[in-house]
Image (cartoon, rainbow, N blue to C red; front, side, top):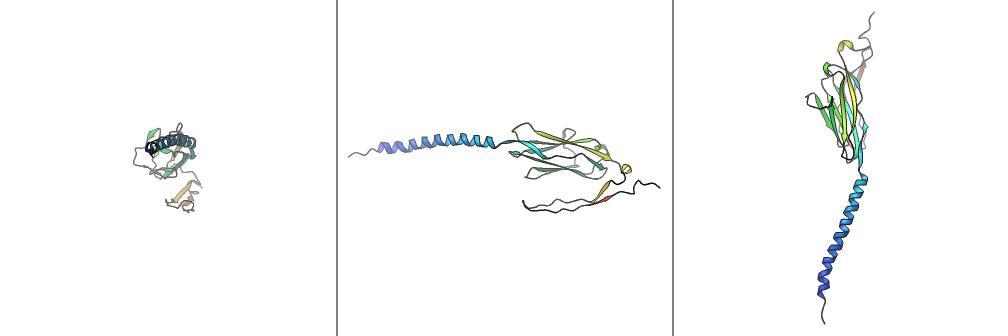
Length: 176
């Protein structure tokens, strides 16, 4: 009685070919699935135009969403940040903060731009304008931040409480 070992020899090869074809089909559908999940960048939080007193500090906030998660890039008057006064902190959630300290009188009417790009579509951009007042120009009732909030690390889903202290300069420009 002869055994047909040839069939057993070819079965693993055929099985590998079948597995390879199934694997390629799955890779194609997986790629299609990944592409279907991708969506363009959008700005969930945009920087706000602000009025600030010279020689103080200011923070701008920008949060981007998209799949993949977009990169957030800050610019000042259309140019990359180069000044030591500019500090950027970005969290894995897509929230980015630009802090300017100190704000100079020459920063008046500066355009701050937040751009988010993930390569799915064109980048999205939001602008804000800084208005800088000298100490002599502070209007009556203009708020003064006496104690700024500090950054805290918080577990996702938990609540964080930050404090600051603000007062009004109500008597600064009052004349009798």
